[in-house]
Image 1: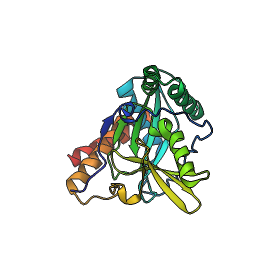
Image 2: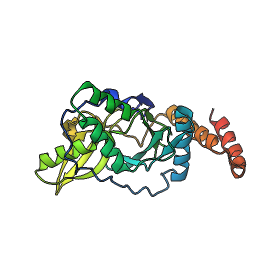
Image 3: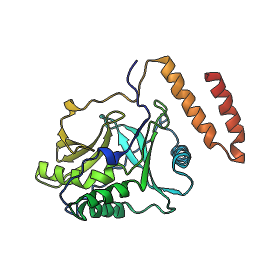
Image 4: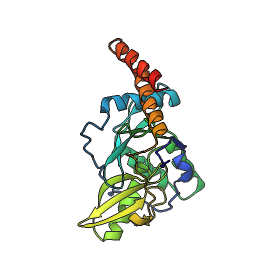
Length: 256
């Protein structure tokens, strides 16, 4: 059976190293925006509803969703969205403000208190990953923290600038497998991959990437299809959606 994108619950604050030097303050990486067109992609509105319901089940009703991040595979094809949530707040902050807060928490001082400030900031957010296609489970992963884009994005940008000796552009946020993610930066015709957590520069050959878009295992395909039907049923709660829910329920029963 081929490896698939599976549910992984992690606390990023526990695995992201505490870096004891400051941000330059002007290196917030621009978020790459991917085009998701084609019959293989799930309706974006549905994905948002799935993310909202899952987040509410975990963190309660008093949360707010921000704009999603786009994760691609090594070939540059969109495979998942990361929906960021702020907890116990009805207004998701601007991305620039989050970067500023991360920078302030890291740079407040060089003591244990600074690490505590950073940890407390992380705990105010959560991240729900939702697959862009039905080739994988609807919710492959949840992080009880800010995504690495916010936590390490500026540091990765500075490292890429130093590597190229010039301003680098963030091309992609790469999801290599259920655990490993990378910043892909470019400058001219040169490209570099930086681990989103360790900030280590790696070559494409060093990245353990899996194929998110194909499986030859019929049992796994059936389980994934059933998971999508179940997710769609759970968000079809409106009056107008009751008939759709009945249809989806029948399909789910047929799959079992």
